Length: 628
Image 1 (cartoon, one colour):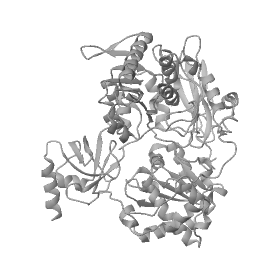
Image 2: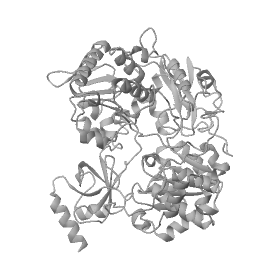
Image 3: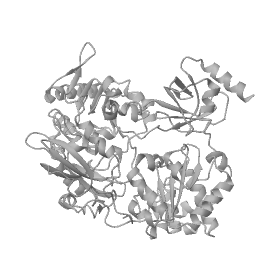
Image 4: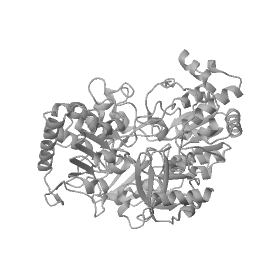
C-alpha cells in the first residue's frame, strides 16, 4: 500500500445505522470496496472500504454518486408497451408484457428465421443480462449477441495494479486511465512518486497524457502497430532476435519479415521518436504495459504479452502486461461449443434483422449496432432510465441496478469478488437474469434457466455458483469462499498463471490509409472518442451534470473550426465515405488540427466536418482556399 496513511474519518464520526453492507462498486471494472450504511431501506451513507487492497478506502465521483440513481423520479419502474397512438403505455403486470413479447418474437422467428433476432448488451444491464442473453440466444438458434465491451481481450493481467509501485516504467497505450479509472490511476501516480517513468501513447491529448512524463501522439487505432514497431526495435537494441520470443516457427518467420519502412506514415511517429522510446523501455525495466480496451478487438493485440515475455518483465513485481477490462474469465453459459458472433457489418449486409432486444442505451453505445436496430419491426428496451433507446422502443422493461442485486464482480486485476445487494429494487424492476428466465419459460426452456426462487425471481447465488463450476478458469473457486473472503486478500483466477498465448502472429507493417490529409474530399481523420468518461444514463437527469454530459459532442480543433466558420455548440455534420454523422461542435485542443473526434465514429475513417446549415461543397472550398 502507500507510504502515507489512507484518508480516514475522525473517530466517532460513523453513526449507528440499521445495517451496513460491505460490497463492491460496479460503476467500472476496478472493483473498489464499499461500505454502505442503510436505514429504513434507503442508503444514507457511502464510504470506501479501507481494508480493500486496490482502493484502500478511496472512491471516485462515480463510486459515490451511484446512490442518486436509485431514487431518481425519472427511474423506470413499470413495463410499458407502445400503443396504437404511438405512446408507451405503462402496465404493472410483467406477465402480460412478457406474454406479448414472446408472441411477437415467435411470429418473427416463424416468418424470418432465428437470425432475425439481434441482442445488444450495454453495461447498464449487468453481467447477468449478457450471460443470460448468450444462453437464450443459443436456445433460439442465433449467435448475434453483442456487448458494449466487445470480445474479451486475450490474456489477463500479469499482476494487480497495487504492484505498479514496483515498476521502473508504466507504459499506457490508448488507455486514458486518469479519466476512466481514477482510483486505479492513483497507483500510477504513486509509482511515479517513487521514481517510475510514466509514458503514455494516444491519438487525443487525454487526461492521462497530461499527467505523463513523456507522451507519444499516434494515429487513431494504431496502438498495436506501435507495439509491433517497438518490439522490433527493443529486441534489436538489446541484441536479440526472434529466437528470444517464445512461439512457433511460423510466428518467428513472420517477425523476421517485419519491416519498419513506412512506420512514420502509419503511426505518425518519427523513427527518432520510436528509437527514443524503445531505448527508454529497455533501460527502465521492469515495465508494465497498460493497454486500452479498444485495442483488444484490433489485429496484433498479442504483441503486448509477447513483448513482456521476451523482455522478462513478467518475472518481476511491477512488470508485465495489464489489458484493461480483461478481468472477466472465460465463462461458459452455453451447452457445447459456442458459435462466435458474426461481424456487425456482415449482419448489416444481410439486412434481415426484424427484432432487437437491448439493455441500457445500446443504440447509442454500440456502433454500428444502432443503425441496424433502428430499422427493426420490434425494439425491446431493458433499462433503468429513459434514454434514446427507450424513446424508440416498442416495449420497455424496467431493470434493477447493480446495487439492487447480488452478483459476482470481476475486476481489472482478475480478482473475483462478491457484490452484495445493498437495497431491494423497486417492486416492478427485475435483474437481467430475471428477464431472460421469464422469457425462456414462455418457450418451454425453463430447465435451461433453473435458477429461480418460489417468487419466480432469479437466485443469483445459485446461478453464479453454477457458473463458477462450468468454466475451467474458475472451477477451483467456490461461491461461499468468494462471498466470505477477507477483502484484504482478493481471490484471483485462475489459481495458476499460464504463459501468454500467441494467438495472432504479427505481419509486416504495411502502409494503411488513415484519411488525414489524404484528399480534398475527406481531408480529416475521424477518431472514435468521447469528451468525458461515460457516467451512465442517470446523470442525464442530475441538474449538476446535465451540462457536462455531451453524448453527441464532436471535438474539433479551434484552428480547423475557425477555417470552417464553426463555433462552439454549432450543429455539425460529419461526412464520410461510409455515411454521415451529426452532433454539436465542441472546440478542443485535445484533438489535432486535421482530426475530428466523435463518440459514434469509427477510428481511421477519412472525413470532413461542416455546419448543418452549410453546404458540404462550401466547407471543401473554404479548406482549399486556406491551403492554397
